[in-house]
Length: 539
Image (cartoon, rainbow, N blue to C red; front, side, top):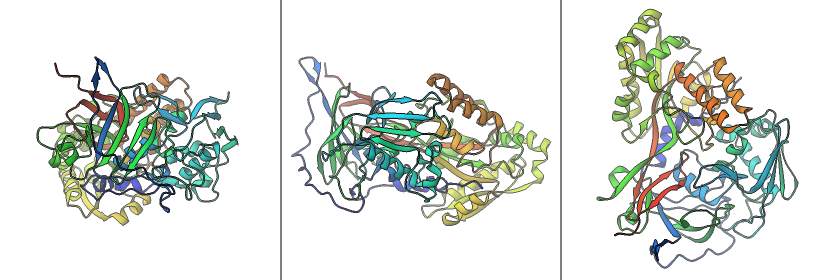
């Protein structure tokens, strides 16, 4: 019996709660049980911009960033639906591998190099000589403990379930044992990961923020913030923020400060360079802003085992009937149109996978419904009721009206949030509100988890042999470009088969200060340092 993760069904609620407005700044200890064991550095005297130009040469700069609130937790419990928490944790922790902040390519993190056995089942990572920010060395035992903590989260870790290919993951996820047999430390500088099947995206997976490394004795040690980052070294910490120094990065930015700013006053006063997560109504007058796409989507799932959606012709008719832009404008005005499952900056995504399949053509939709006789089959459009407003109900009712307009016998049906997950697990709902999010920035996580026949989140009961074959071929393809092409082909197939009714992809607003020409975020919500462009000197 397939196990479903219920967390995804509540994504919209979590997203709204994470971005709904000011909160008191709070900083929690990494252990979540004990306060720091060493004194914190004092708060800097004042904010003062560095001069970006001296003698015609660009000097290293401190990039100052503000967020609505300050939270820091250990990587294995980071809330992947909360982009602010992801941003903070990403700056302070690294895993075995890491994405280069300027090129986006995956390379050494805490591991300085790695090798793969001839059968592609054994990955050996050799650690570099790195210390945690409290001075203790980072050892292979720390890496092993960190990966086991992720596995122990089981289906509650949105990215952690991708460790299912690691030998022994299932037993740890089920709580039967605390240690994966496939993750061992032969010595202090070596980590060996053994897989049950070849999985070439492993290095890219381990670069995700969820797989950041923390000490074995996480509950008894650590300064706040404890850091394992090889790119950024903490140099100061205060109630409202922290400073990290860039270490060995090939770029303009030499340090980053992150400040809690619930009311966007720091950006309004010109004291920070970027303000992230500012509600539209709080953007100061006269300031430029931009949107950054997030790896978080909202859609209506279609149960392929329940009539009338066991017929792909009917599923395609829905895509022809529903106007994404119209629904976005009414219900998600600050979101973008969902064009695919894989974020645009992640290898393996298509520029517009939905494309022609999502073009609204009511005449064709009505004809398909009539020809299949699907109008004779009653079904419900299920949604969850939240305490924020009635938008979910209005959205479901708008969908029902559209479906009835093309001849389908649909009725809206509400559920409490507590009941919704159980209803999804029962597998008897025909069409229901759903979504996805991940900080594992690999196409496999966006596609295989939800739509492979044996995927852990296959709540739609999708079973498309051609799609399964493409994913399985991609997983064993060593060449990265060839692997990305296979995932792109698989993504296009999902929309051809109309596996869901896409709605929107969520975005984060970035307000630019007077020194910044442009800036962006990674799809998981972390800073994209390669996109930050400082304005040059005035003529």
